[in-house]
Image (cartoon, rainbow, N blue to C red; front, side, top):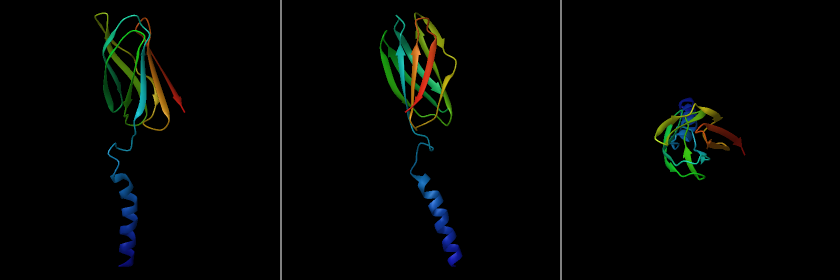
Length: 120
């Protein structure tokens, strides 16, 4: 009986720490999106593995910050409209959920997107 109780306690110690984590083990990562173009950027959506986060509108010269929750290793892709055209960037950058990653995506004058990540 003692062996069964020990096994039950060991299983409980292994399982219980993950029970309260509703994020699937991944924490959020801050993403700043900067509009360096001269046009208003509308219908912006940030996408990556495990997330699709609406951002809204970013006026010229302005920035928006969001939090995303990637499912593991991730890159960032932006979809947006500018001057009547739909733009989709290629996935760029590398980050993981939580940790100390800071992600910055810059929409340039030609509507290309550059993603920079830093670990703090």
